[in-house]
Image (cartoon, helix red, strand yellow):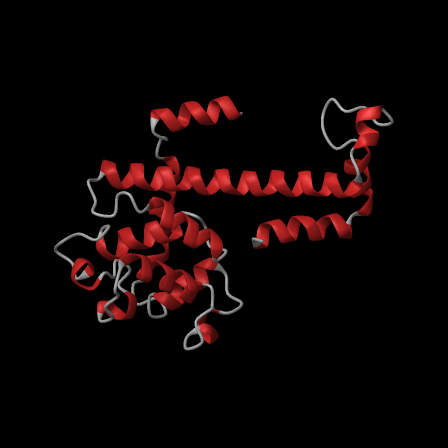
Length: 207
């Protein structure tokens, strides 16, 4: 279960009044004390709430993936089509969903052929681009887990740090003093990228 889901369910245990209100009137249109409300058990309600959170989390990742691909497509970048992997890896490691995509843009302009990225499958400049990966997917997973302090050799450098602090470490303790603003700026540009028309229409229908 993802960290965000765990936090939501833990919050329900900490705030019993809120939980009780959700149990007695879990969804709009269900009147407390009605046969329908009585038919929904506390366990079912918790499962429904959990499913809702999971679905919202999934929708957030899917939207980020679509925007990443749209952003890369707009700039005609080699990493177009990798949005889903980038967004999912970021979310799985408690990073902002557009973080890895933005880092790849700053480090290699989305695997521009003029950089070392394609030769090494390393769009993130990981290890000063001296490290070669078997695939771009491997590079994405490695960088995400490194920032999340999940890699034994580097965990101590990234543990208990904010995202900005992690970026500072990743950039060689601010070798480029504009690195953090650059990454955040690209993240903002990705987030502002319009969804493809078919996905935008689907999102409106769901809303």
